[in-house]
Amino acid sequence: MPKSRFLLVAGACLIITLAKALGQQPAAVETRLSVDGASTADEWGASGGKVGDLDGDGCTDLVFAAPYDDTFGLNLGMARVISGKTGAPIWTSPGVAGKRPATASGGGDVDGDGFGDFMIGLPQNGSSPLGPGGSARVYSGATGVVIRTVAGSTLNDSFGFSHAIIGDVDGDGFDDFVAGTILPWNSSQPGYVRCYSGLTGAQLWQRTGAYAGHLLGFSMAAAGDVNGDGVPDVIVGAMGDHTFGTQNGAAYVYDGLTGVTLRTWIGAAGGHRFGFSVDGLGDLNGDGKAEVIVGVFRGNGPGYAHVYDGLTGGVLYIPTHAIVADRYGHTVSGAGDFDADGTPDFVVAAPDGDVAGVVDCGFCRIFSGATGALLREFHGDVATRKFPYAIGAAGDVNGDGLDDFFAGTISVATLPGRVQVFSRLCADRYGVAPTGDAQFPLVWTAGATASPGNGAMTATGVPPFAAGLLGIGAAPSAPLEILGVDLLIDVSSGAWFGLPVTFDGSGSLQLPLDLRTPGLGGIALYLQVIAADPAALQGLRATNGLSVLFGS
Image (spheres, rainbow, N blue to C red):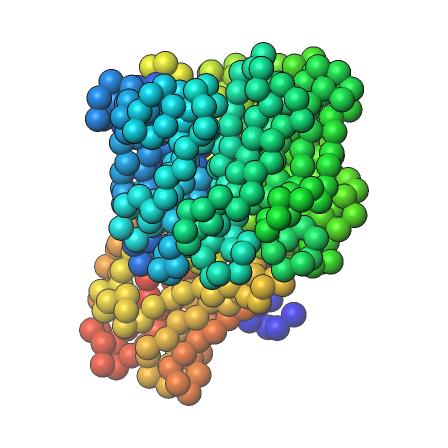
């Protein structure tokens, strides 16, 4: 281990020891963002997804639906794109022609303008300009205007509840999309899913359920390239499949270009509701093929999920949970590379789970895509709030090069819904030194794709070979002026450490900092550099603060 890294780790361990001795516990603040809905019982966060960086701040933005929002009229509903960094609204779309925006999803670039686009589902049936059986719309991420509208064929299709932008399947340079039906349990219709050209809006293919009540299209998601032909595919759930009993359920992977079935998985027995939720995960085992996950929300037993190998169709992992009423497996999703080990991870939700005596507050568990091991459990804090109802990879919402994940909570009757974004490990800048953050910044940069958590922190902007001090603390502080610089680390408790450093010939300092350092998992530390500079006020300059959250 390089000397600088050894001293850094040793200093961190010393701070933890001091903090505990002083009755403090350096703890991780893992919530990156929390945004409440605008109306009571609006179900803000019932569905959503990431849409790329729309506001140009270098961070991923997000879209969510609030089907019972009252902003534009009682229960008219809305969908909203928010900044992943700040939570501020970017675009807002109200209900149309009496149809509520029930679902939202992010995805790729449908109109080819370089900005991520998003979809809104309006599945309410009934006569309207959008069609009798529901519809789905694609919106421009750049302008917020509607790019495409597709509609169901007949009354009671409830078309558009499920949808996804799946990538460019026909090779024209524009991402394409799918939409499908959601039907009642006793429906006399089989359900269907359609794939559309992003460039023209023309239908590319349709798959229809095998029989009445098959419920094909109940869930769907971009699967990635499952068969390695260079074309993205789609995974679709048919919760009403009854091969082995009523509602044993099924899931299918369809070729993105042709709609031909590539994989078929059937629920083990009646009541399993296999395929209640589905998602693509990316390549977990390094074979160049995408893996997928299927949620099993059982009505007659404990829920579970299956993670499948894209190449072979075999089962890789089966996360399980023993309590039937918790609705484990209700929602499953990819989580991005949550632990920064170079392999995508996945998450399984139980929105009715009881935690520490709090009834129906809900929980979700994030698992390693590399090993299947449990990485982290997050849970709600309000009874019957049903955390989380929607989950998914959020991309990088704070610009540190590491993946985050979101959770949407539909809430109770007296509260609005809530959207939250979480990190397992991260590095955020805070505070501004008197000389200006741009003049003497302290930043952390992610490592290579194979291990992004193994990065480095860098400070630049002082004379060559300047002497300095790297401060490491257990807590931040409001700016405290000392000798002409603002100190941003809490030194009052004694839980801090100063590491002498020397800048190089270009006036830069770079120290390796692995956010997956063993023994520091779940610990948050706060860093700042102060350096000698004869040209500065009282001969010293200070960087911004850097809050660092370590993961195991």
